[in-house]
Image (cartoon, rainbow, N blue to C red; front, side):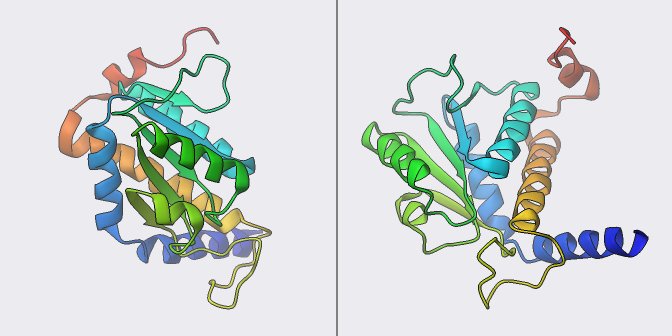
Length: 184
């Protein structure tokens, strides 16, 4: 078991070391200059989006998860962040088109810089991870399906939260804790 844990950890470290940090900083800058942040993904990528949305809320951002019943309409001045390994998920392509139609910014976290959504996006973070497709150019992994991408996206987006705290907001643990759910 220890060998498996070490291998998974090493894989994620290798993938994250290959991410272009300028892309991550660009997403940070676009998000912090947007009125509201909307997040969507499908499957596990959607769950990673929800985790990131929660952390953004703890940091005081006005954030919504697409598909929740209390999510308002997206508007000019907002940003839609999509998380999609392929960058071609049909429902997310439709969300991207709608966001652009109303003048919202569009951001994508993906493995595929040449995808349909990437072509429309204002900023793209490319995570060079393995997907369920197992294309020849993707890194090798012992993990099933898109686990390497999802785990890398989770850690990368958590690092973006830390970047925001360290470089801009200066919030401390108590300020973040005050926004944490208390109906538990």
